[in-house]
Structures are given as C-alpha cells and as structure tokens.
Amino acid sequence: MPVFMQNGRIRGSLVAAKFIQTDATVEQVLLEYPATAAVFNSFGIDLCCGGGASLSAAAEHEGIDLRDLLGALERAASSDREDRGR
Image (tube, rainbow, N blue to C red):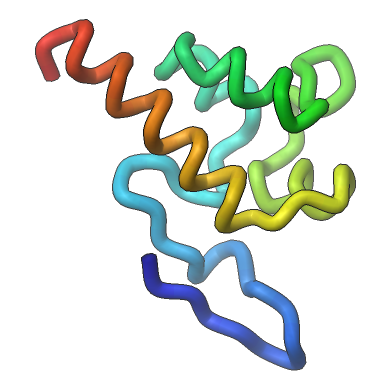
C-alpha cells in the first residue's frame, strides 16, 4: 500500500487503500461493508462518537496506526464483497 509521508506524518488523503479510502467516514464504510463493524469495535471506534469522522481522523483520535486500521478494514470488506458476489 503506497504511503505518503510529510514531516513524519502519514497524509491520510494520499494513503491509498484497495477499496476503502481514508477520507471515507466511519459511517460510510459501515453502511457499504457491514462486516467492518467488528474491526471498528476491535479498534475502539464506534458510530455514536465517530460515525461522521473520516477514517484518518478517527485513527488519529484513537491513536491507531492508519495502515493497521485500513488493512483490517480491507480484509473485512473483502469478505463482505465475496459474500455478496462482487
């Protein structure tokens, strides 16, 4: 996964995920890929407090490595896509 670093920080809008983009909100990802709910729960990200936040903002707020979050979300989303025949 390509990562653009500037001043030692990951620039979220330039982190490319296979299907999920870092500027998508938590709510958008959950609606499109329901299987990601378990991932968000495991990282301590929930809809009531972070549903409108972008993935990059939610990761930063929780002190989570954005690459780890995206990787876990991509795996869950892949499972969802396979289950739905996409």
